[in-house]
Image 1: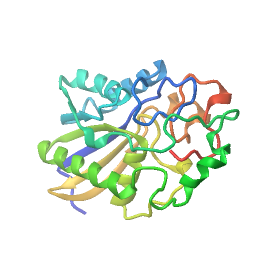
Image 2: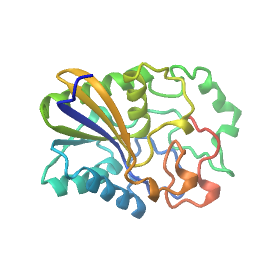
Image 3: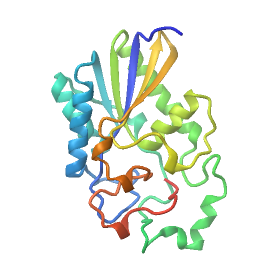
Image 4: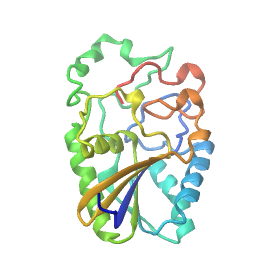
Length: 231
């Protein structure tokens, strides 16, 4: 296997202040919690010694806040990258806690008929297409060095599934993409030759939240997502 000459790191944002347990999706007003800011600092510590020349972020506030400590440590600007934004979702704005789980409403079940596409949100293939376009642009602009793209769980995970030629059908609770995790794509020229994964903030994540498909930081237990929300 060839040795990578350029690496693009896909970083998931940190914990979100979300006391109501809302599936926030692309909604404005959802920022990092205090713990989430500490997680972002962990990313900066983990990557500040790397040869990073490009940092770009989803336009959503939680992603930009996650990118900020690393950019400050490296003296770089955070560039906008709309193509790594969160995926769209028909259930955006709803809650999935023990006492207010939207999936108990049978009128919403009609959106769940096709988990392969999925029928409740942006097609997986469309997510991968835009994510990989952003990855390759970052690879070209950081050629011979490293780049960071701060994004969101589902876009990062589906991109990894595609890169590893795995099925898009999956259990959201089993995604290997925890808060402030780093999924790294190593390229030799234009060829993807290596994928690695790190969790610099894993010890900061409450045990019950590690497998959650979206973040409900500062939420009481009854508002935290239960089961498998379609996120």
